[in-house]
Image (cartoon, rainbow, N blue to C red; front, side):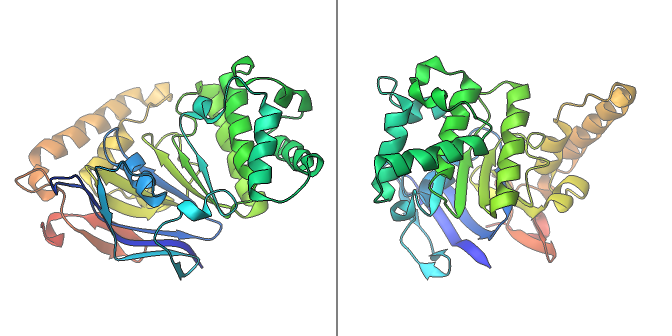
Length: 304
């Protein structure tokens, strides 16, 4: 069953210049979904449009916007109890001058009419979900916690509201690599245990490889390839996707030369066959299906 459906999302500036163009997005119940792209690709802007948090100078339009099959003008009114949002700026999610327990209780009671004691019980339970079993941690101020601890508290503040969908914008990009793996692992475990849906935003195909069911690759405000994890990682078709994959750091020393040769091959394909992937203005072509689960923006799809 589809949890969130968006058809033909477009974002333009006040001069009418397109920034995000013809984006379709389908998120299914209990699924892990990722939007991948380099900085400036339009990933975070797409999320802001979904959350109805766009800057006032930008204009958004769409043909269809449904949450659980019901039409909506946006999901801002659903934030909290139905839609959870994890920002990449987790340190800014809390007031450093107020103890964390007071902030978390206020967040919970904003959405649920319960006593402070009952709110605190749910908060403590949510902390165990993110492997923070020391309850005294929320009696501290945000600046007293490490980056990994604070990010976990941030995630717990979303999970405690029992949302159906969690949108996570680069949730581990500011953390050390070892902490990144820990956070992603328990987020995946929570998703499997409680049947959540995720929409991850990331610039790194390597980081999210084991965190996704479906992947959408974005370049300059348009999707260039959409598919399952198997489609993207084992059968990439667009040169932009191939370049992202070849850029993933490899730790396999024995095959280092083979990895270098693959990167050289991809870059040669990019130089020699550029016109098959981009029109004369550098725009990507329209998506078209090459299988029931796999769509790619290639020349024979037709450029606008």
